[in-house]
Length: 248
Image (cartoon, rainbow, N blue to C red; front, side):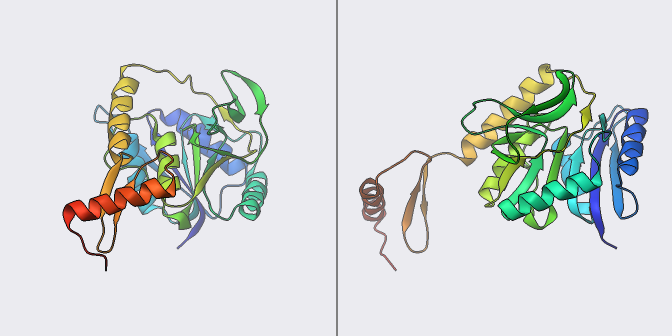
């Protein structure tokens, strides 16, 4: 059996989670929706990367929603979300993940559509807006994209940035959409954030490092820095000569 939506949540407070599910069903996410959760109320914790990935694997929804237990869908409803996703699909069929708050690549002003501890009915920026990271309170994934979280990072932080990087590598884009919800979280940053930050930085510094890849045909020099074509070709020629590689 397939569903229209799958909601995936790590739960440390059953009352908060129950309130969220009730609000979601009242907003129209009921008959053809599934709710998956991992119980983190015991001493042993399942981290966000591993836990959310496991629920994504089990999910059967065409749209997968990774969300905090402390959000309430008390403003916009299912009809609103489907309208926003349809609008996004028309604008960019290559969207992969979206949310309600994020940062554009130029870093000039956060794009936000949310009610939280920082203010009610926040509406900053235009929608939909492409971003390079998303707030983790809600991450809405197009199932067909195959997007997942990194499997070599652990913890409970920065997976909203991680998922946007994964999406980009797979050829998809990330957006903030106009879907108003309430987030009750306080967004505390403690020692656990520092640990997650260290793991996140180590993984992505390695993954995005400058390097040569010797393919079965041509050596390729990968770099995030701009290089004129003539310099790039020279690097490839030198790599071929040094390693005595013949062109196929």
